[in-house]
Image 1 (tube, each protein chain N blue to C red):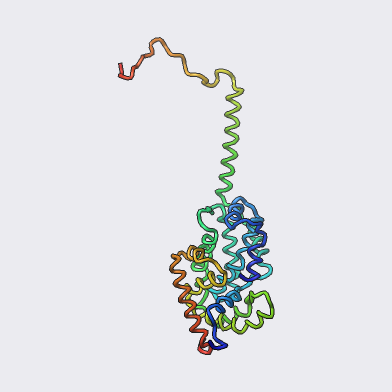
Image 2 (spheres, rainbow over the protein chains, first blue to last red):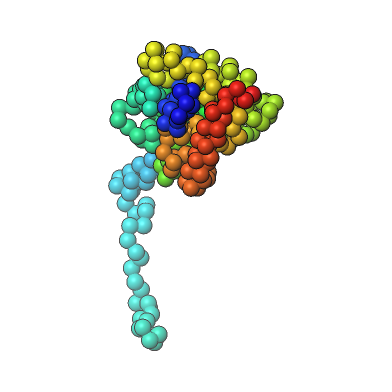
Length: 91
Length: 200
């Protein structure tokens, strides 16, 4: 092999030197832009929906625990004497 | 892997994978996102520099992709490799927004010369960097002659040191295609470097 010839290993070794370094301020500029980037709209909507669902669940639990007796159906209506008795055969 | 790349990878990582950092970013963890920026800024600038041949376009392109990554962070699903996710965004940005600004589809040799002035050297040892600088310039000119698809395969695989699987998923081609491209690239580079006086 001639002195000035490139071996595959040397090509792979030299290839590392083709890396282009970013400028010193690069990361800072990106993070500055990121800090003013608005939040994705659907994330905000998702959070609002979660808050509303939490509030609704709390209200429902409160009503079930402390609501006026009889204001909410807590048991099925009593069966009447005329209630049909249906067998699996349909009689 | 060269020292600057090592520094990029370790910076702020705390032993977390890219996917972990991206999931944390999706929950508005700015520090996790900053660690990702530290890991991939060099890769993105190098990628854009070697496809566009323009240092300023490269910095702008890398910056735009990272800002876009932040804005779509909630859409990331860890089912795909982060590198593939990021490089797909980078390639789309290059094809849709930057490529038309570059007059020639191939990298002009003069662009390779300009880039050669700004390359990191990447060898850590200044003595070795100086010794290799002339051969590096010749290699840069040879790389500029490669087609765009061969160049991006060479950059991700040989410059960034990514695995064939990572390069394949990033470029959207089978792993066999990456191996085949690299084989052709190394053979072509050896031919080109064998007669540097014939390089443009």
